[in-house]
Length: 118
Image (cartoon, rainbow, N blue to C red; front, side, top):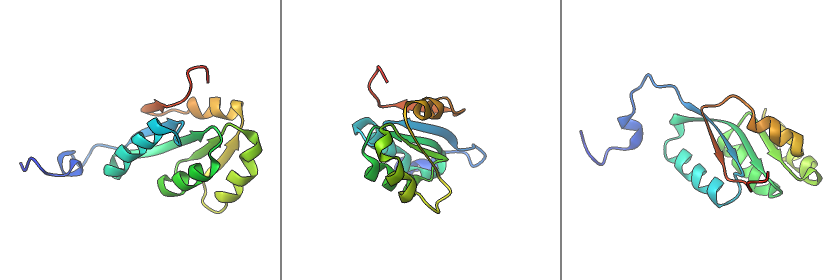
């Protein structure tokens, strides 16, 4: 086997993608996680992306990664998120309760790049 072979070539074909939620996707930990996901896109299915208030970056990420739901914690940004995702089939949500619901979705992995109190 070629040591320099891309990761995708090393993974058995029958393995299903891992379902992943990224809480705090617009922060440094979230951005690093997305970088890893983008290196082997077929290995991950994104369930949820969340952000505190960086709605423009959240829209950009959601459009690219196609999660089931994108949630912005600061409800002031809900309309912007909803409008930015219109026609994509991605559910838009806002508020603390919606963040909690996003975190509780059944997935294989959760990357929590958010403040501990959240």
